[in-house]
Image (cartoon, rainbow, N blue to C red):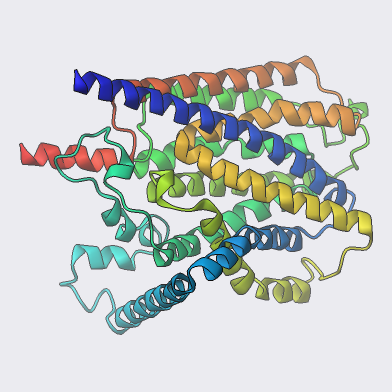
Length: 429
């Protein structure tokens, strides 16, 4: 009887988490669409085409929620601020010592390296999806596969959160920089269509790193989403075609510019897919980390390490450094930064409360939103194929979300922790 009550409570809690996650996803969709249109108003016509600077300002706004947290802790418990500082400095010094030790021993000169040491020399897995924190997230061997993570996983310390932010910051910046840069060359709808291919990379990366359970039905849902995207992209609203009146007020772009914009949007899709999986892999339960602290540290790290990019881009002529030319442009940048701050925190919670594939496919709903926005703001019109493709994308999201819900109801392991626990239970038998 107690077991049945426990299962009922767990089921209700899981349903509540999914509802909250989907609500936050809706907030993210609205804000991402709105901020893309804001950025497009100053990028597309070269009024202030500075995607690196705008992305840098966006990431600096992540520091804002951290300020009251630090002030509150400094007032109530000054010793905790001191402990934070000591933890971070200790973690940095230990990481530096480890890197120095690895520099002194080349991989080829030391054939007897342990497997964990060899993994640490790999340029990708340990930097992005390493096992250092994964070990701290492992469930006990006899734990239930669907046990509540909060019962077995302690909250991350400030030093662990800082290291997580360090690993996450470049992925976040590159994904957002590429999508901002592509808005110089293509419309919001076109960029949204291409970045929606991140669902493919989320499914691939998620299956590789065992964050998502790969199933044929999910694969078909993602492929259906791609089919809708391909159908939509058969007409390019931003190009000069025989049906050029559909372009509306959007500035005319050459084929070369459109190609550059498409490539940048595609790179952004890869980065979005990767950091969605990274987030779920490293933080399987949202209660383990304070999101404002996590993103605040992301902002601090990016501000400290990415300022040389201004010099490089200015010297090379890729993006000359200039202050906003008017108060109107400044207001757009500030509104864009606030929207990015709220939407990214909502996105992170949505990923943790649902799953990377649900959120990534769900963000494809920004396609019909952007099409409606272009009709209203830019006087651009879309044919029936655009709307048919948009419907396919929305239906594929509903299908994938339903498949994810069924996996959870059946108790199927869908996270890395659950897969690891299953393997350990099998080995005990």
